[in-house]
Image 1 (tube, one colour):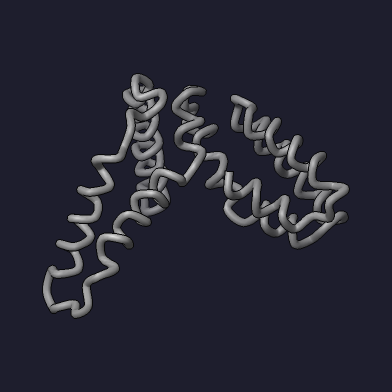
Image 2 (cartoon, one colour; image 1 turned 90 degrees about the vertical axis):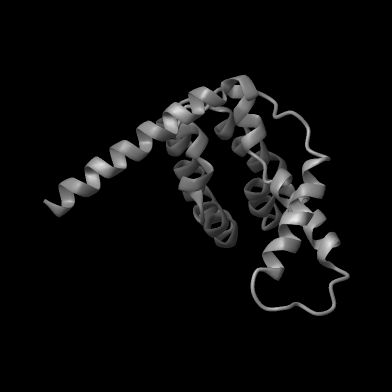
Length: 156
């Protein structure tokens, strides 16, 4: 979501709706290869239209396609497509830690951050698509094992 907003913000008003629609359609695709091709095609278009928007799209392109590469099911993908949960938790931690005037050495910071996260936890809701998490864990395990095999092949 943030990537879309960042790309769109670089564009003149008359191009925003078309590019926004293309980004929405691309990220709605289920296949990684199709989504990557569509993003690369859009990147080429944006290079002629607005190089800043193109660079914004290119930055982190692979990361935005992680849910596609792992074949995360649709409902869970919608949840994972946003950083709002993380940002909300860190905002609460910031509020909890705001009144600390003197940070002491050792694990003082970690304890306050932990306390803030416990406060944030009370506000968390059930993850949309939580039943699909086992499929995500399997995909992550497969991706890690493939990466390990590739890295071992490079060493050998």
